[in-house]
Length: 474
Image 1 (cartoon, helix red, strand yellow):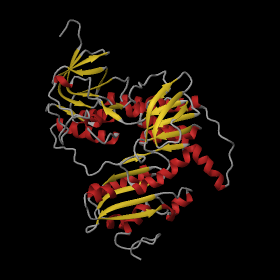
Image 2 (image 1 turned 120 degrees about the vertical axis):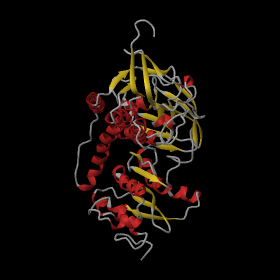
Image 3 (image 1 turned 90 degrees about the horizontal axis):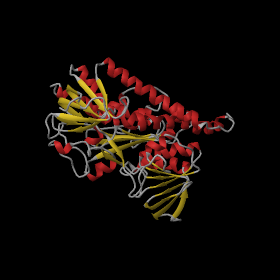
Image 4 (image 1 turned 30 degrees about the horizontal axis):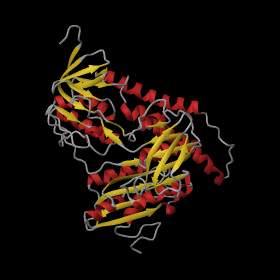
């Protein structure tokens, strides 16, 4: 060690303090291990909390209020045209982030987790070198890699703070409400942030290179969601790509190719949301035996161990799906494994949620997957037009869909589109993990009137007729 260098030793070094990293740190500490949590940020939280899940949901919640106020006219309530104070909205969003990151820092201190700010790079399978930190080197007995992922840029277009071409992080800063916004990518990030800006007054155009929004999702659910975003956005161009981006001082001229009426179009800002890349490069993995696949994902086993037995990997860097709750679960598994407890990442489903209007959520085996696998299944559906609670909420556009084994009735998958899908999906995930049958859901008394009833009524259609729809068994 060079003169004047600061070095610390720890039982567990965790690189990355996002949901996976801090969940691993807290679990490891609760199991009696000495933990050092390393991140480039001032406090734990990572992408999800600082520039992802949390700020985007804060803005979606705020702008949903605008949409609901417009609906109120149908109920006999008249409001003046709302005025948007973008500075106050931005401040509120930042307060949400600040409150939660401070809370995580307090929890770290209470659990005796040492938090070190700095940029980490593996020197060897036992040591980490830090840059821009008060600590120069960390020597560890075990390490957990939780470095997450980053947005993919368009070829030849770099994200820059002064640029009118934004990634999700820049878009969440609400630099302004552009009159014309192009969203490149029809996945969940593009649709969610596009919805925020559209509700705030932007004319939003979406370009997606494939022939559908949210590629790979259930067609029945997507039909309802597409109806909602089609009414919100100015235009959606499928089977189209961005060929050229010409950024000027006050606008961006974009050349599109594919199913578009006008190839050259002008926008005030462009949001690029075409996917994310794992952060496995530039962190010294070449100084270890850790293996990375062609897509940049670190290869792990069911215990989340890499080829270096003492180094584990979790979250986005360790593979799809790139979801915070999957990372948190993996973090807890990894911590238990290091502590010597029997543990493995062995799940039947990982729920996914798209926070558009209507929301869409799903988990487990969906219909198209079952068909591709030649699996014999029954597909049970309940449309929300028959839900008393949905009608009273003025949001009866929705669907609950169950995929069950044809012979046993075991619940294999569930999809929900409609208001509150983010919360309803948890019952389906529990049913799948526990091996529940459709009959179990049907016989569980759900409170009335609620949206949760749509799950039990869909399940009733497996063996007998549901109450509020004409099912298969009349």
